[in-house]
Image 1 (cartoon, helix red, strand yellow):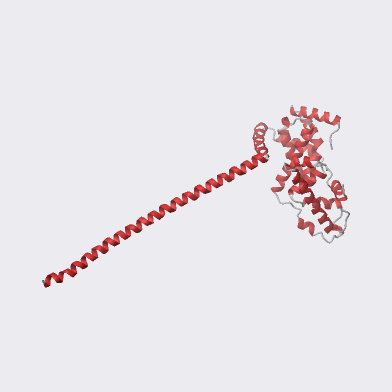
Image 2: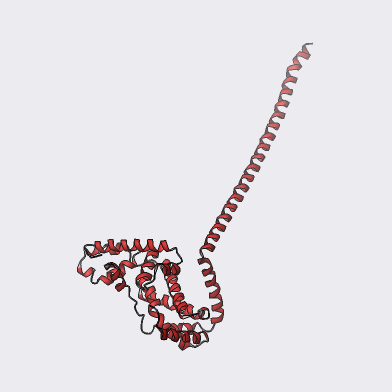
Length: 126
Length: 184
C-alpha cells in the first residue's frame, strides 16, 4: 500500500452518525408502521422490479426490445407516410388529367366553332 | 472488517428475533451497522444530513425486507449493496456541491484553504466521477477486494480496476496541484 492509499484509508475511515440515529430510524419505522404491509408490498414490488432491471442480461434485453420497437415503429411510420404521399400523388395526377380533359373538350368546341365560321362564307359564295 | 464468532452469533440471534418482529433486536442490528451504512453515504455524498437520511432509508428498507436476510454475512453484503446504490441514486438526483473547480480554486495552497490532508482527501474523493468515487470508498473505507467491489457495484472486475487506477491518478494529480510535492 503506497502513501496515498494509506492516506485514503485514514481519510475514509468509518464515521458514526448522530447519537440519536438509531432512535430516529426506529421512529421512522414506527411512523410508517400503520400502512406498513401495503407499503411493504408496494415497495417490495418496486424494489423487485428495480433489482430485476439491475441484472445486466435483463438490461440488455430491455434495450434490444426498445430498439426493436423503435425501429419497427419508425418503419411503420415511414411506410404510412410513403403510402399517403403516393395517394396524394395519384389524386394530383387524376386532377391534372381531368383538367387536361376539360381543356381538350373546350379546345375541341372552340375549334369546331372556328371551322363553322370559316365554312359559312364559302357556302354563301356558292 | 469481519465479525468475531461471538458477535456473529449475537447477530444471528438478533436477525431471527427481528424477523419475528422484535423491535429492540432490529435496533441492535441498526446500531451494529449504522457506521458502515452512514459512512458509505457520507463519503459519497459529502453531506452529513443527506447521508443520514440515505442511511435511514436503507434501514427502513432493511426492516421491510428483514425476512429475506439469510445470515449476518448476507446482512452486511445486503446493507453495503443497498447503501451503495441508494447513494448513487441520490447523487444523480442532486448536484454534488463539491466540484472539481471548487477544489482547483485552492491551487496555490494558502494555509487556511488546506488545513488537513484528510479533509482535503475527502473533498477530492467527493469530486471524483460517481463510479470511481464509489470504487474508492468501497476499496479504502470498506477494504473490499476487487471482486467484492465488482459484485456490490454490478460491474466487471476490469472496470473496477480501471476506475480505481483512474481515480488514484486523478487524486495524485489534484493533490500535487493543491499541496505541492507530497509523497504519493
